[in-house]
Image (cartoon, rainbow, N blue to C red; front, top):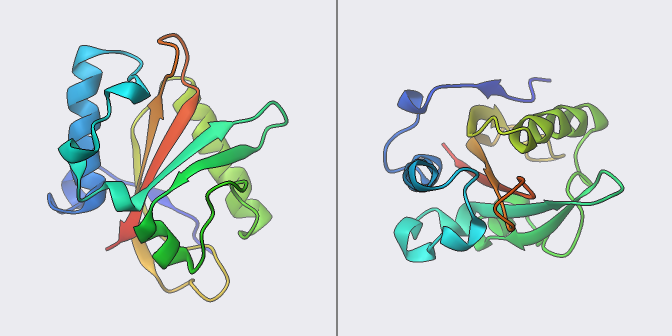
Length: 151
């Protein structure tokens, strides 16, 4: 199974939620590095916010769902907010995403990709993904934003 292929922003249509959020993130990155989460104004990327997941790394290596947008809930078939990332995807997919999150926390952002959902019954749902790093303290990336929406 293909879990994701990294792509350039040019491959994603301008109006897609991933491209919209990427544009906002790039604007904020020009002003602050790392990008502060508090600088994100929902109205600046209104079409992307329903497709946003906000993950917070935990000491045990898991990622807590702080936010799971309504578009993501619809896509996944259930809410994830308040749970932990990866509880419903294969271990290989989880490991690949954790490695990607490690890159984000090291300052390598954004990472854009295309894939299908690695969830049972959703394997044929093609999506674009964008993974973005944020800081709450101005020092380190301690929040990971993932925008995920159908192609």
